[in-house]
Image (cartoon, rainbow, N blue to C red; front, side, top):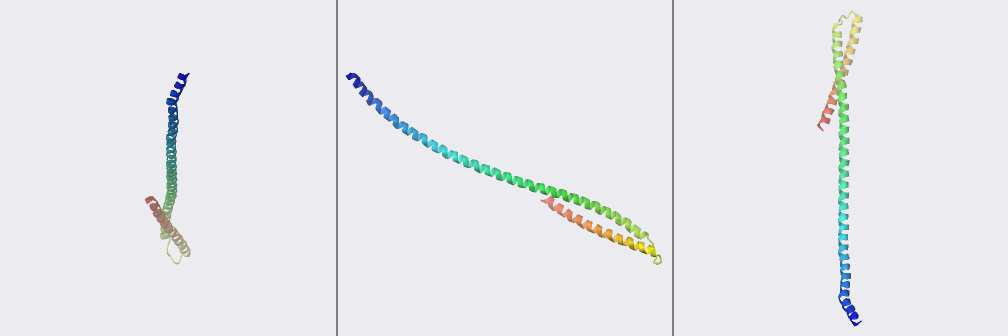
Length: 157
């Protein structure tokens, strides 16, 4: 029994300090483990901030690209409209030029005899028609030139 008590004392002397040491090492280990958890949390928060910033930058780039696309589509629509306008005005101008030519020929073909009242009335009527066509022709020409200038300025952009 004395041997058993001695052995228990010896065992207690050697094992208990190890157990106490193990408990203190366990506490230190948990503190060491707690520190990486805090670092991990900090890293995670930094990663989240980077992700949010990257997401915000991406959204800003997408919004900017969408605005540029909308601007370009509007520009293309305006170009198409102006090209159609220029085309119509060019055709109208060509038609009026043709009308001017034939009206002038008609005016030239009417006799200028002051005694012939019907010829003078007809000449007066055709002259008025010629002036109206000439006015339309000049207006159409200036409208076409203005549309061409707008078209050229849009093409430069």
